[in-house]
Length: 470
Ligand SMILES: [Zn+2]
Image (cartoon, rainbow, N blue to C red; front, side):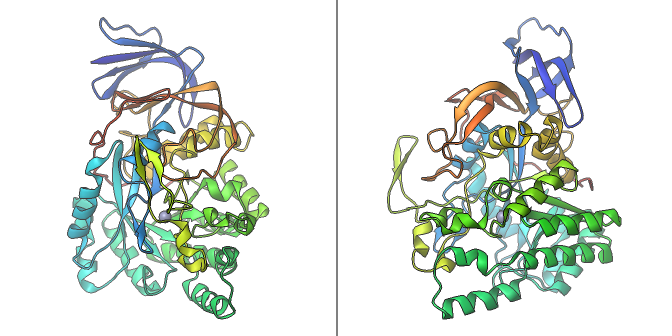
């Protein structure tokens, strides 16, 4: 089976040019002008933009949290991703006491319903001599990344000494450490104080997680990266000061990279004071307009490397069912914390929104160029996480993960367009100029306008190799 996409404008991380693309089977076989093929399906892409499929490096599908579970699984989340132009998603394996292999196997079972390609990061939430010895086995499983937390005392956090030891092991094995940067000790103290003082509203979520903690922990991780000579990737950067710290470290040659997420670019902690403020509860919290601006600047000047989503949706009101693929479904959500902000499940939907929102409100507004858009959405994550050039590239030999983008399409975004399995959308009513029209996963057309042609089980697990340090 072959597909020939004619007359489109290709956008890569470095170039913009007119070309045809020939796909045979699952692979791009030729890129050039005036291509022909005796039997290919021909798609006229005149006036359309062609980009490599998006790679979302940070999602949480089917993740148990606070007596419920994130409301998208590996099928619904992947389907939503595809409608937004994303064809690869990476989520995080919960480390069980039984060890890495057992934990990965559990996640493989969950992901058997995958509809786009996927890979895993390993949450390093426990540390011991035994775990230290087992870390290299993750590379054999195709998992090249460990995530640590400097917050969530007694649950997810390991101490700095353990992080430092793990960094050295990562270095020896060509692995990459990812870090959630906040100050767990300060947060625990402030949360206890707030609850003792009777503060239960959502705004206290932000008030008890100050941005200085994120800034300090980012510099701390960068310092450890330097001292272990081992690279670190800071997830979901949210505070302007974190960008300053990233820049400070990178200017001194420290191997540290940064990811931000759409919610930290567009919203502030003020959202938490709304009547429906719990919709905006995520960790770390959103900050201020000055922080939004500094993050945009970090994208503009290339201090940051990627935009992930941290997609971890919950229903706003999980007592009321929605209809998804013709069936009613309700999953307990934000209402669990109605009387206590510490019990509101932390997380937001965004896997479908990421590319369309960033195109209109990032590229059209001049914050980033179309080529930077492709770099942050696809090529850089592919490089950093060991998938390049199989993913993230429009070159012969690459997987034919391709988005045909219609720059003329006008969409009023929101729950009506959304395939994210939840009852709200953060960008409800936002006017979009440009939207994915056709999306291919390894040569197979899985989204065609409003039509879903993908299916559960289409997605493949991607074994990743050693990544690049950008
Ligand atoms: Zn996350």
